[in-house]
Image 1 (cartoon, rainbow, N blue to C red):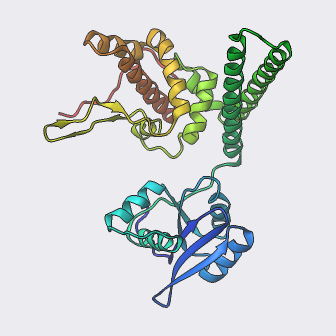
Image 2 (cartoon, rainbow, N blue to C red):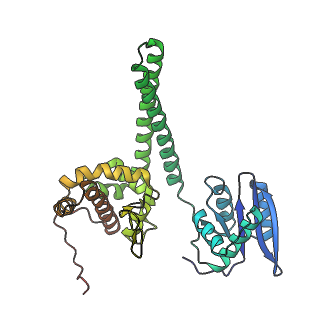
Image 3 (cartoon, one colour):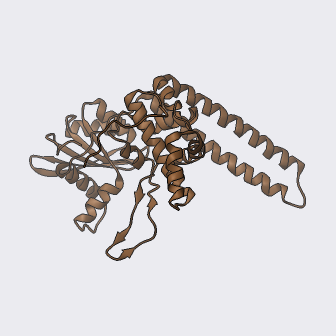
Length: 329
């Protein structure tokens, strides 16, 4: 993270149609409202200047065009998790809420707290993520059609025409899912040829999972350690205790990464049989009386550790590998 900015900080609350802007001019707090369009972006830069640190929340697709424009103009952009700024506002016991106030809080956060400077993704990664979203939507539609087909077949009177249409829809959606998946895999193999080969050397991880993992982690370029990867996938354990109060069992966070988490869980069934380290881990946990599902989650974590180490080192999977690090006493 960068330290508090030496550049002027500008807070921007982004909505679908407008941008609420808060900035300082001659030590006075100023507000500006512009449209969420290129004309509004130009007016924003003309008023505040390009060489500023612009602090805004991640608001789905509404903030992306603004972030790209400000980055191209030479500005520093910080895109915050909305929950982070929400907790920051709560810390100061603020009661009211409006777009102008939110922009002011974003300005204040950027002045007081270190933030990560946002960088745009590679074009190929943006395209891959869009294809992934299309694939996910097609899968949802296919599930809906399959459910409708099953419901129809359970009725005492079945329309042959309705049955035929639903079967055609399911067949068409299946072909589309396969086509989009193939296109996505080709793009990923072109961009991450070496990394795909390394990840596929891990027993239990196939081409599709390797591609999804590289897309999810952005090629591992912005990760410093495997714990960050595990946290991104929502596989970190979360304990909730206070004094003598124990609020349920220790469970994984399940925060983000739902698709890759599900894919890894399916891979864990194969890995516990073919991957030496995963098999030893699974057997050890089961022997201690741990639930098999918990042991499979541990195998998912192990696969992520192996993936991170192998991609970063450039050394393929080795079944007889042992760490050369001397344990700290």
